[in-house]
Length: 358
Image (cartoon, rainbow, N blue to C red):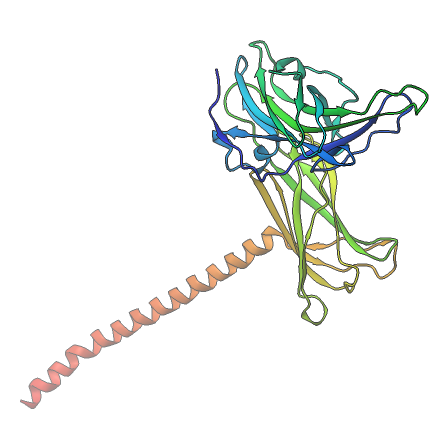
């Protein structure tokens, strides 16, 4: 069973991962979004060319493979690998395992496999790109009929390696790879809900004196969430406003997991107090929290937890306003009834007075 797809916008962002591998190489380093370099003269990139028709309004599906399918479903995704190098590039293509834990989407080393990678087949294992060239690759995901319920994770990689080390000119082989994440949920019926909750917000002043906030977040849904968003400050000293400040990317929470998101703010911001507006997003889910906070004056210290505007405060305010409106309406109704009663009572007397005069 294939799933209909729409072309993916060419401007969508990319995820990159840079790995120095094998033979005494240093630990892996995450090259967050964008491209990874096959040489000093260029870079390679990998991007989706299509997304599911039912996920056009889901920003995550424009960057990652995000889907929910029933057991026994088969679907495809087309991707494009591109090089900006002035030299030909040999690019290896493969799927490798991934997981979500401790607030991060974690890539397995080298070509580690898991259940999801065993379901993914690429129509080519490598592409020889001409200078500044590109190639397309089709990924087929065949979910077996016996697949159990739950979400799985993987990455489709495009990899470029330097010449093998010969032990004379060095003992490190440089491996660059850029990938597209896959979040696949399997189970009968509709897709499980995605949701999260924003908890305590702590203002801080870093060692270098820059203010920041750390917000606790809990994944209350049944699918992983990738958190991004922004913080805006208003009603500060002398009626100052600041922002928006983007949330630091990289926080991914598995279902039931808790973690933190942070935002680095401008260096010259006064301590406060400030009114803050924090908005966090993951795909179609968005939540906003407002309240007041004050940054500590001393570098390297934490401030008091932010005072959050409770939803109950707004509810009580609306309820009070409704009670006032109802009371005003009752008073007006009573006055109107009294007026009508007086008018009715005085009407016949006037008529009798007129008759006697006549």
